Every structure is written in structure tokens, then in C-alpha cells.
Length: 130
Image (cartoon, rainbow, N blue to C red; front, top):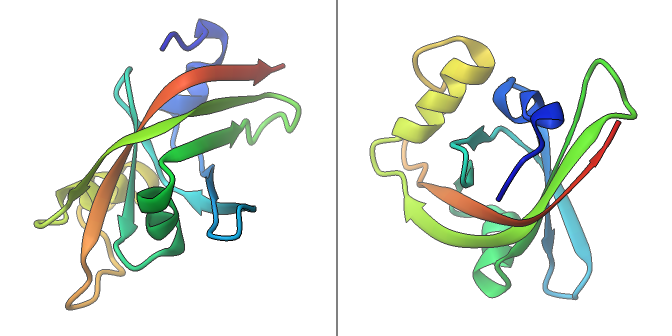
């Protein structure tokens, strides 16, 4: 999926994204998330027990909205499907996100017994404003 150069910075900077999934009742549910972009897929770490994970197991359709914190009227939205959901056994990905967002080496809120997954969202449509 081609992301316009004009909005690529929104995926490269450590900006909070908002992940929308479809709930069991068919309605939208939105959660703030840390994310990474590798040029092809959006990656999000989540506890396996979170509602967004259950929603995506049932319906892999999702959307990520990232708003420029310096200009509320500039954003990028990536719509697509979660094509992969993989357990993060050694918590390597959440630690990578902690480095990106908090500038620390490991995720500080990890609790014993926490089981995490990495969700990979492959964009099919991209919308931008600003």
C-alpha cells in the first residue's frame, strides 16, 4: 500500500494511533495504541485478553487513524485487515514500542503472566487530510 510522502511522517513519528475494530454487536470500538510501520504493515502489540483482540479474531477488518499532534486537521487513516496475529513470547515487540514511545529499554508496565500478541494490519485503503 502506497502511503503518500506528504503523510509518511505521521507513521514514522511516535504518535499515538487510534485503532477501530468491529464489536460483537456490529458497532465500532476504538482504542488508543502504540504502533509501528515497516512500509507494508502496521504492527500493534496488545494483551491477548483485550477486547480489540477478540474483535479482530472474529472480524479482521480494522482502521488506524493517526492525527498530527501539531495540526488537528492533518491525519492519515489506514483501512485494511489484520493478516497476522502472533504471540509475543519474549515481549520483544512491546519492548521495541517502549523504546519508540517512552525511550526506555523495556516496557515498564509488564506484569507476571501477561501474554501479548502482535497484530499486523495490512492497509488496503489510505485516506489523508491536510
